[in-house]
Length: 426
Ligand code: AMP
Ligand code: GLY
Image (cartoon, rainbow, N blue to C red; front, side):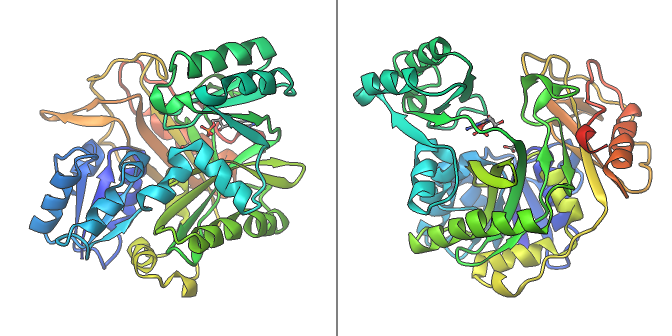
């Protein structure tokens, strides 16, 4: 079958690499992809939110499945768009409909869903202009630190952790009165701070049943030892040594099952990946956030560890037959290290020539493109996160060293990467 993958990051290069291993895929299209996927997929130069353009191209190319990588098209309703158009309604779209995608698109929607289904999460209240004074009072009486979350998508910047009441009140005011995070951020979730260790769990669901994919941990801070600014993710590790059978069973019973059952009971059309961002405190899991897609850079360790045929899994998600599928995984440790542009996550330059890409990789290594583009016969930087190096070894320590070592052979002006991904497990 012909498949279209939507997106342009390291996550999409990884998904493309895996989809192409399936005998079920006859041709893989990508819109718009990057320099890494350009070499392996048929490129469609169509914006990820140009639903009409994407639909037309699917019809023209007899595409039968669309796999949506990033959240933006999902939250804007790409799945509903394809389903409601008679020329595209037969296409399996892997990604939830617009309403369940609000699990990521609206923090308030996600919190209310968790409350309805008794899923453990931080206590919270939701405020807007209408109940602003109650919000001020709620914050003034709240224990510290206080977490403020802009309701809508805010490109990963909408979460503020405030250590004083004054800070929280100032931020609250600028979110609601000055639209600091835009219109969608004028609704604010004020929640309890959760302590513990963060991890990510992934499921693929057909709307009723699900399969659990390998778990991962993402390293969000720019600096080694988890210091400095938050980024989209500087590296990832899978599996996690502390995610034992007991914790896994708790996560399934208290979080994964109630979420999937809740979606089903509420008649939500959800065929796709569910990303559970968790905090584990004293062995107890809490949901920090849901995402309606795979994580990046978690995908770069989760998908290479998956031994099943991904297209077979996606087909089963699309046609409601995930219940009889067993997930098989590579037991070794996988570590991904992300090479970023100098200055990232603040201002950075694009268009820097990347060299060293053509030398052969050591065994057990993969190199995925993220923010890259072709410029004539060169490959240049085209984003903050540029390349992702994934390595497999028998332990996290060795996999981390190997994944960083691969990046030593690659250069572009301003290249930076952490050399300590997975440091706490060493
Ligand atoms: P989010 O955009 O919801 O993923 O939040 C970004 C980051 O903020 C998370 O990855 C956590 O590190 C942190 N965070 C969010 N909510 C909380 C919370 N209630 N308690 C502690 N940390 C949080
Ligand atoms: N790595 C976090 C995310 O994809 O949102």
